[in-house]
Length: 341
Image (tube, rainbow, N blue to C red; front, side, top):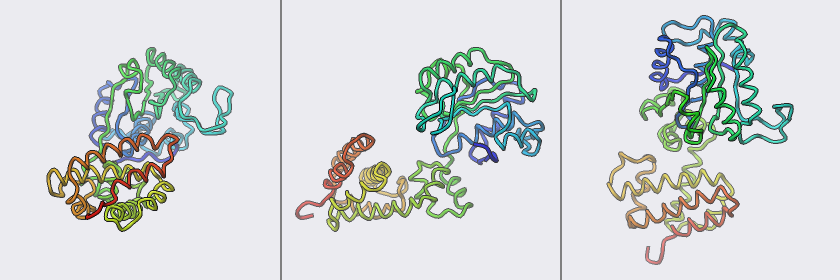
């Protein structure tokens, strides 16, 4: 996506290592950019591209100057030596064919066009850079076509493959790339970064985002922290007998059910932690710890594990054609207190 290249502090170590490799003339012809969603993998890939295409990059950091004609072209999405291969949207064309729906895979025609472009001389006489994101969503024929490009690299050409699941790529593709792994930052650093941007509930948001700051920021924009507290309130009401599980199931099935079940899974894992080693320091949902503590006092550990197994089965089913209300009812009915509780 054209625009200003974002940089993030948790990328510093990976960037410095890559910059040093480039300064020593050891930059490979293909990079596999790995790491979890929500930490800026695409931004890091664009940072690499911008730096290589820039006419006067910073000698100390290796970053693009953001001011030269090449940088302005790159920011506007018009640099002739940069290619971005992505999932096509409805109405976009490739190979003379217009899409009638959004694509779920990168197509062979896209990779063939890329191979043709990379086989030509750079129009600006410098580097040619291609970004493939998400590279682990190439159709098999497209992956085979890319392999041919990787087997015959042209000088001063870099392919950057952004992946979430590297094992979905052909082993022969992975073997021809050098892997750069971006990691989730330390929780304190991520929380401080969110606080600098005036984002409240940073701890809770990071728990929901598995520690990924950009995902946490998106959740904040969606009002997810408030929705999560509301969902926990209704869950606790069912578990204490104050709310009808069928009523709550109807509400859950009408919302974002996969996300709700994901939250429930996180609560269950924390309840198991409390049961095994009482205390709050290891909890992901620290803000809900006291309320979970009271809930698990009357539940045996083996019951919590059994409910976690049931939940994992439900999370697999929720992406199918299953009736989500019945699925939620089945889960929540198990939490309704029995006689004498």
